[in-house]
Amino acid sequence: MLDINYIRENPEKVKSGLEKRLFKDIGLVDEIISLDEEKRKLQKEIENLRSERNKASSERNIEKGKKVKLALSVKEPEFEKKEKELKEKLLSLPNIPDEGVPAGPEENKKLIKKVGEPKDFSFTPKDHLDLGIALGIIDCERASKVSGSRFAYLKGDGVLLEFALVNFAMEKLLKEGFTPVLPPMLIKKEITDDLGYWSGMSNEGFTNNENYYLVYDPDKNNPQSDSRLYLVGTGEHSVVPMHKDEVLDEKDLPKKYVAFSSCFRREAGTYGKDTRGILRVHQFDKVEIVVFSKPEESENIYKQMLEISEDLMRELNLPFQVVELAAGDIGYPTAKTYDIETWMPGQGKYRETHSISTTTDYQARRLNIKYKTPEGNKFVHILNGTAFAIGRTIIAIMENYQNEDGSITIPKVLQKWMGKEKITI
Image 1 (spheres, rainbow, N blue to C red):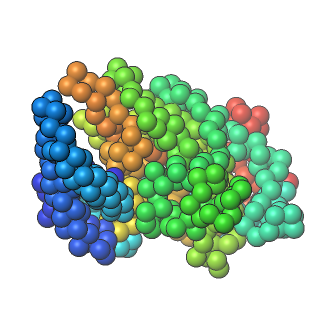
Image 2 (cartoon, one colour; image 1 turned 180 degrees about the horizontal axis):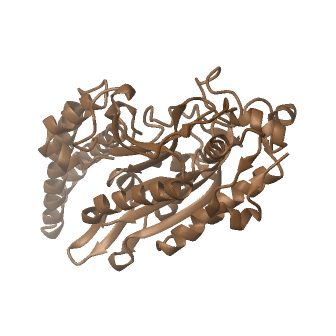
């Protein structure tokens, strides 16, 4: 949620930021400012009436006290109504993109750098599903029989490869001061609202709950029921709200977490797209990093998080590029996102494997997460990023490290957990 004081003092800057991210209802800014003025006017009137009520009480002026009470009975509900309406409109505004973020739609993303060169194979490289079927480590056919389309079994060395990646990430991130977390995979509806993804379409496609899986609904006749529970779309969805309504100690910041969890997406609107293998599935695993920081430290922490994700890919020796997403393609709560796109020989193109984002204080305001300072409590900045999207990283390893005989060489940094140098038939 944006700071009402910031909106009031910088209306044109807010409008410009919203236009940059292709937000259609720019007039909402003026509505918010007008509502805020009305609310503050009512607040002043109520304060004056309460002062008169206290004075009448001290003077034992019963008649005046009755008149003031009657006036308050009208003004106070009116104030509450305005306050509720203002909050609803504030919640419907997305975050303002960082100044350097490219304006406009997805195709306006900016290439920051390329690392490594795609391998020049002496044979025609296969895609991960053909390799996985031949090696017996990916089975989509049986998963479809059990769970439907866009599910898969990882088997044998495929499972060992997943946990080698998890161990590799955890080892590195523990040395960087991150606390490991196994978070819940079910969250309340109120939490999904507070995170800000439901307020509008984000780069992860969460709009009006179409991409969340509702798994528990005891009150089916009440669509606003808070007893509903939803599966997380990514680990951050249950890690970010962990400190909801808390005031953190300044000395404990930055607070850094690394979470391993399964993630669930309905992938609404993507049917017929990337349906082959395990690239775009309904269930996948991720190692995710989340940081709560002081505002003045968040930009440096953002750079450190990007560097960590890059280092992981460098150590795997996979070719990748870093791009800055355009404002029209970033998440609703997000101010800036860098993606790492990794080369996939089976597709002959770079595909997204990582996202590193800052939500500044937007989610902290919605979740009421602050930290204590000598000058008073302030909202934290919240950042999130991918260490590994496991399925897509497995695809990248399989396709980049494949050999002509169909075997897959295991990256050196993973061999100690795999206990072998190759995956063979």
